[in-house]
Length: 163
Ligand SMILES: Cc1cc2nc3c(=O)[nH]c(=O)nc-3n(C[C@H](O)[C@H](O)[C@H](O)COP(=O)(O)O)c2cc1C
Image (tube, rainbow, N blue to C red; front, side, top):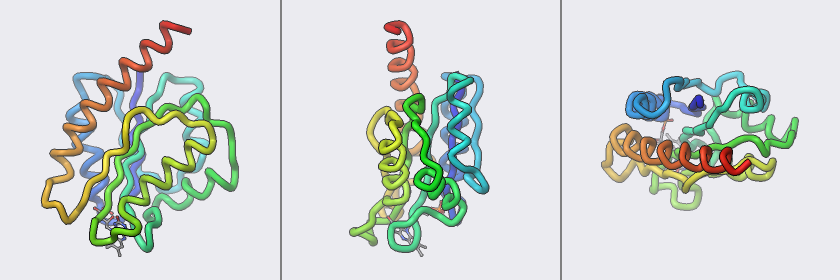
């Protein structure tokens, strides 16, 4: 099993969180890749068809609830080049700030909606980090990521045993 963490970020916080998750989860999965979303498109999810891959979307929020600039090409390709993504199992780490209450963590949440619209299967709840909370995103994110991956691996092994 492989974990691919796709990072949407403007000022690198989401990237630090993804790297913390990578380190924290090394006891669970040998192959964990952290990839900035820059220049990716929906084709990244094709990999899940040939490899046993879990995906983790780790994205902050900008503008008025938008995905970060480096995530735009990937996000827009989900609607511009739609494909059935029923094989894609993913989790979401959404970073935002509660000082934007109308659009809190919408970057990650918008990815979730778009992936679900294409048949993707989200495993677990969305992790939301509030930049105004004072909670370090790397520490909290690494702890959440370890729990999420443990549970996701169990779900995947139960469903492949039943298949
Ligand atoms: C100009 C600007 C706009 C933002 N807009 C939102 C927003 O609409 N909703 C939200 O939840 N957070 C918003 N944020 C907060 C960021 O998503 C948050 O600080 C996040 O931790 C940044 O992560 P990054 O360094 O990975 O980009 C905004 C931040 C800035 C600077």
